[in-house]
Length: 73
Length: 290
Image (cartoon, rainbow over the protein chains, first blue to last red):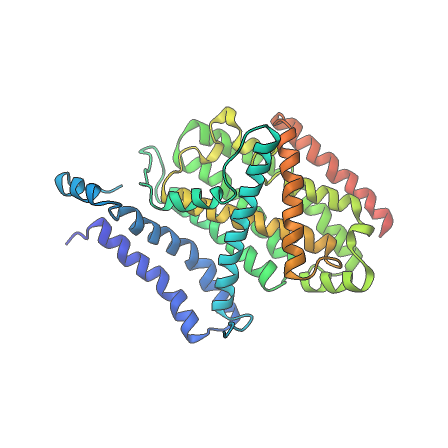
């Protein structure tokens, strides 16, 4: 089964943001915190950006997207 | 209000967000100053931040000629490098050598970003990134002189040394000037900015739009903040050692950088390298004062 691009981006956004949230909740040791922030902050901003980008900005745009299939990026 | 403990992840994340916002405002101020000197009203100071956020909701286009996943991964690497440099430097006051390594990897990332898209303009930008890497001599000379003077490259120890013995700027003024030239070379619209030269459209960034450009700008803002902070901490650590004084001095240095960028045309690639080498060699005169 092929996952839609938007669904894949949402999953990756959650997967890359989750370690940061877990780190905050569990109060991880310093070295692990540095590693998590270094590795996960850039991809989480990227995938959250991709999810934001694909959201319709207005009602008009939403209607247009319903008419023409959104083919991705 | 409970403030998170220093060293916790929430604390570091909040510091990261603050640095990103403050760095973005500094770059906005930099653009404003350039515009005012050139007789233009210029964009508002928050424009650089708005620009970054705007890219997050713009459609991402990836050229057919690009080499995926390098096209995306190398930009993420560039941002990660500056996140690490920020955490090691301003947050943890750790070893300056790690920041130097981050800087070196950043140059490699610039080269990679240029090569990944397949455009001739970005390739030219990436070639210039390699050429400009040869001009980073101040980055080697200045820390070496600081090490021989203070016998440490750990930032917290360098600050303590300066609190006891006075600012390193008084002992190593030429090394400070060479580092300032390095800082200038990382500022937008600077005379040494051959990698972003308008003669090659936008250099290595030409083909990066949408979200990926937003991530790139996030990394660049952090990079500017880290370099500015390092310059002030290493050479003026004895004077400016509270967050408020450092922030005010950062604004002051940004204004000076704005004046230089507004009044100096971009120089030819080889001259750019040569001038930075001259400043690095001049810094070596400081060996006499150690």
